[in-house]
Image (cartoon, rainbow, N blue to C red; front, side, top):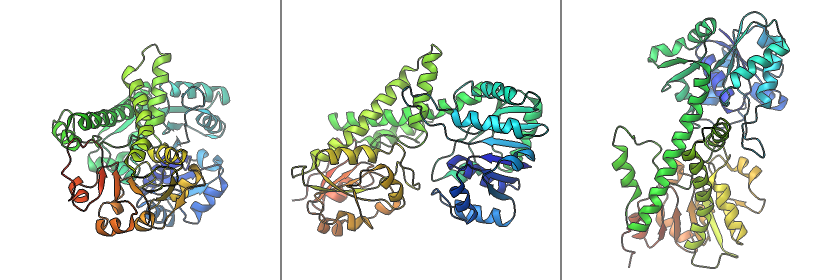
Amino acid sequence: MRVAMIGTGYVGLVSGTCFSDFGHEVTCIDKDASKIERLKQGEIPIFEPGLDDLVRRNVAAGRLQFDTDLTQAVRGADVVFIAVGTPSRRGDGHADLSYVHAAAREIARTAEGFTVVVTKSTVPVGTGADLEHIIAEAAPEADIAVVSNPEFLREGAAIEDFKRPDRVVIGTDDPRAREVMAALYRPLSLNAAPILFTERNTAELIKYAANAFLAMKITFINEMADLCEKVGGNVQEVARGIGLDGRIGSKFLHAGPGYGGSCFPKDTLALMRTAQEAGAPTRLIETVTTVNESRKAAMGRRVLDALDVPPRGATVAVLGLTFKPNTDDMRDSPAINIVQSLLDRGVKVRAFDPVGMAEARKVLPDSVEYASGPYECAEGADGLVIVTEWDAFRALDLDRLKQLLKSPIVVDLRNIYPPGDLISRGFKYVGIGRGHLPPAAP
């Protein structure tokens, strides 16, 4: 099939590339000429394991191409995906749909013959109906069916998620569109991937409901971590104890500094606003967003409280800046709050992240110093904080680390080290949800 993918951000580029790997002919379109030129040269603008090889292979096979002009691709397409950004709108938290609406108008004026237009961008309930009106106004004679097909890709595992999904959700009442979408996703039938056809509003809501529920699980276990610290408990064991219950499950029960990224913060906020306007406020989600923001702010204070010297003039080594490992995404990363809290108190911050430092420079203050590796980051510091659980940080030479640090203090905000491993070597250890710790080394 012939596919046009409008938007070469995270969702558009991964989805378009994976569709081409299924054998479809895909053109990815973006107005950013520099980005398209980089893609044509084989340079991938985002970090996603395996994506660079997949792009190269399908470009070489002639199934994947890139363009700044949607005209030719849309005219010849069976399916046109809208995969542009929907950031939180300033002032009210609603999803900003201006890019989605603009794409729909361009498609309407360009498409020829029956065309399925699919919202891959995360959009509020009712957006599909709005797009139908926009398309009808722009091109009354256009034969276009609007479908919702939300994405459920995890950054760092997006290719696997696309090719072996837990489910594919397709929202449409149009039988012709259903036939086209079934053919598009037919390659997944080899893996027996569940494909859920539903009406469009339901599909749009599934995406927001899924992300809100996962954000709620993260926030729940973070509050249990705080309780463990007060009453004497181990949050990792609590998480395992409840996660073994099949009704609950073990995923997203890892205590930490709060959730971030491109989806959870903006999607929970958008769902809240939609629900409030519909007269069905989501009190649980409202609380989740409030608790999460408070938690990220509190993490900086946790680091400051661990220092054995006055904050002003002290140096803290920060390992990990991205909101999660295996991505360079800094959007709403807890590291932003933590670093700013330290800088506000006069702390000098030295940071290292395996792939995220270029993006970090765009959002963190210029006063942050960047190191070439974890040990260089730790040298001479008055304490070290682990913010992101990159594999590269899971097996550090602790004896070497202790020699490099000016003060052997480790604040492990991801609980990647057993407390005993650090305490037995004479470190001062601060973790998450550790109510009982082994005695300090003599």
